[in-house]
Length: 286
Ligand SMILES: Cc1ncc(COP(=O)(O)O)c(C=O)c1O
Image 1 (cartoon, rainbow, N blue to C red):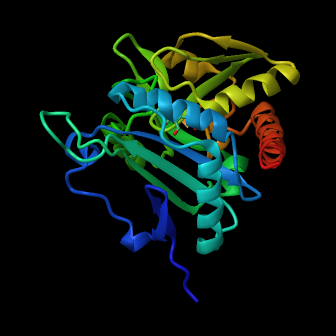
Image 2: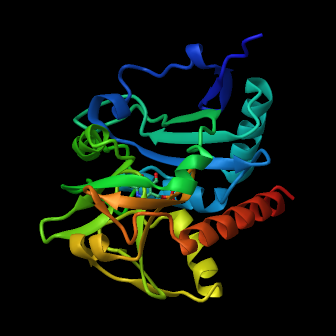
């Protein structure tokens, strides 16, 4: 029997095909919105506190104050999971100012909150065993330290990636620095140093979780600018994001990274990070 996905609109859980918002929503009319993506482990949301902190920081850019809490999100996600029948979920949570009122950005007062939770659809294990490719492209994301819904700047990069059979595209700014992936953070390893940009990019929650693990395993962590050449000549390159955890990049712009195979550190970090996520989610769920 086919069980339809269920989403939540302003806390009301409904079958996906009935989940709608107004055409007057400022998210639709003006692209004003904040969002988060997180996943579950054993059905429990991972790092939900951090994702909520970040969505409210992003929503503050359009003056939206917090209007739901962690316990409510846990309840909604658990209910969606029960109704949809997926073992693990990828959860997209979007907040907008709601319907258009007076003036360009005026609203009628009620914000919109949507929870879209579907099967986690993580990359196949073969992507972690063999690594994936990335391309670079010159562009930058609007308000890059926030997770707003304005992701159009990444479209060109992902088009190039698709043409090249690559998985991700890395933003390169006007000065030639790699800032982040279209939907991920970028990390490189050179000898025992991990280097990752912190300027003009999203402060990734996955990356923050990987840092203490890398240090515990003996790597030194540097938050610094990295150039395209730094990436090409690194021993290992990884991307991090909530759903992909730590994914090894073995080719950038067609050039092999190191010997072009997944490195030992990438494997170790992903394994340790995943174990930590499972433990964190169980602890947070009480
Ligand atoms: C632009 C961008 N940078 C970085 C990340 C990684 O962030 P996180 O680890 O919090 O998922 C994402 C995740 O979607 C992203 O969209």
